[in-house]
Length: 111
Length: 112
Image 1 (cartoon, each protein chain N blue to C red):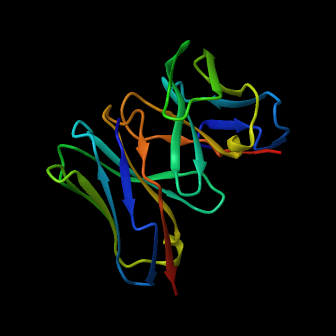
Image 2 (image 1 turned 90 degrees about the vertical axis):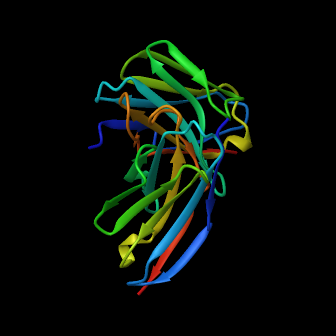
Image 3 (image 1 turned 180 degrees about the horizontal axis):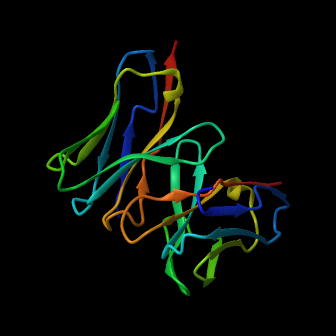
């Protein structure tokens, strides 16, 4: 496959509950990203990481946190899910220079 | 920060015709401009990219042109086929491919 997997693929959760999405890569790429995709907005950057324990905020980071304790894993946590966080979440990886490889996405529904 | 605008939001063409999608960016420091294709229910996939030191790049039926002065770049698809139907996203980066900022996307429909 593409060397990047996301889990779970689908999740339904209740408002106010914490949710963690996982991104796992086997490419040993330094850079990892979390985006959300919503109709009319394209893909918007939530958080990104340039290496282990090196993370930073993107343009829509409110309500989200991330962790990267190993090169291969990048976790996205919604501390207290809200309906506005219903979306499709994509993880992506990139080498030092060049385009992204995306994961298959996680469809999250907050009810 | 960087802002990328993409037009049109939807585009319908007849099979065999050409399709053109245009994007403008705001940060003159942007140096990398990729295009992604996303089929329904699938992940976005890179189809072509261009760096700021190049004005045009072609790959079979697709081409990208870049006008740094006007800060816009375009995707050209010739001899469109039904399998070209998808959502296309442009993006820009000031870090040679890292921290991409995406346009809102264009739904391309190729009618047979």
